[in-house]
Image (tube, rainbow, N blue to C red; front, side):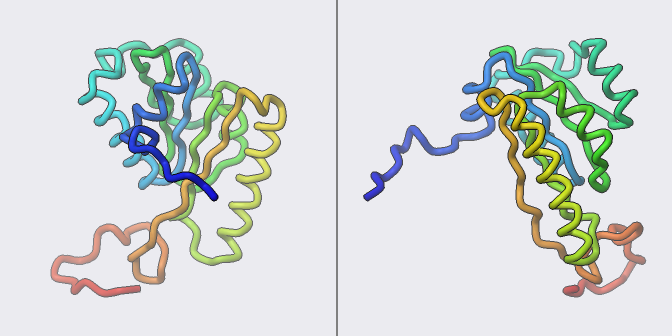
Length: 177
């Protein structure tokens, strides 16, 4: 029989995980919801006094080079325990850029669920993403941690985001997909 978790073991915000990853590089990458998660994490860390300030003041050259070569707009900041945080995304899964960035991180938290309009299309992306993460982790299983955040429920007409869906004409009634 499994023992109940202690209150001290429960998740208490992003710092409760990040404090266990000193001097490691954590990458949060994915769709717009994933970027909102990254922004919320930074807010909670800043509020708790766990980020070095200025928040975006210490961007190393390797991040600029990686951003340029991968084609991903990488946000970078550092926590007080030496953990480095990268955030990027806002589009569909792009294996080439993802593989490039993975070689520079210890922990990857990815999610791409908002840009696919069919189960078949999403399954193909998940297969590609999971294969990429499994191969990356296999090279250093004790050092690397791969995480996938489940996509949120969608409320766009047709069930998935499409360009312009966020800006319906004024006066358009709300409706379910």
